Length: 316
Image (cartoon, rainbow, N blue to C red; front, side):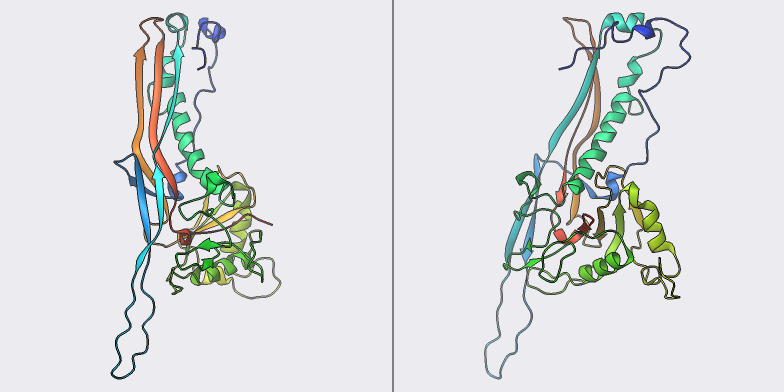
């Protein structure tokens, strides 16, 4: 636990005449993590989503023979455990009394220091799932025992599928953002199948990139003709209106050349954020020290259930 703010911590603020006190608040960007997930409320310690393996295709029935009967069963269970995130600070009574500038506003509402820290916490938590999307460590695995993005996403039938670029041998490879890469991603997504191997009707809806790829994405998707080409071929991505929900920059992505595509999987079954408790602020006084204590907390969880909700590349 950090020591409370005291008169020694803010010696300059004990005297009037400063032109400006700054650094405790900045203009923030609009919320970004909500573009990565379907936002849902939670009323339990954890939420679970259950995937199912459905029916197969119809079979030929010979005259006089019995109808072929199939069955369906549950596949993988995905658990979202709501975690409590907290932050607080204390200010001594003397610091509050002697400071010539109001320090208590830092902890009193969502627009100041404590509120900003909690808002940024949500952004970093949400983006971190994508920052670790290709990681194979135990902490990055989901209910099916596999990471968010990879070449061998498991299914109940035992078959696998890839939600990333692969080579001819089916091994995951990294490719940089390009017209060709996005075209191949659209082809891959259109070829996604369910756990029975039957095609599902999915397409890319939005392209999610780090700030470093903003200008490259604009050149690729917004030009009328093919980017970086001397031909008069049309820009097929633009002509076919791929990524109808647009290009979305996430400033909290840490890999400068990784990019992701969200698909139109049914809402709430792919990338999900559960809010158990929205951000709460509290203030109290410590009777034994007379320090003012300011705290904030929220409870939430996020992750992915159906990996068909996202296609990604970590760059070359």
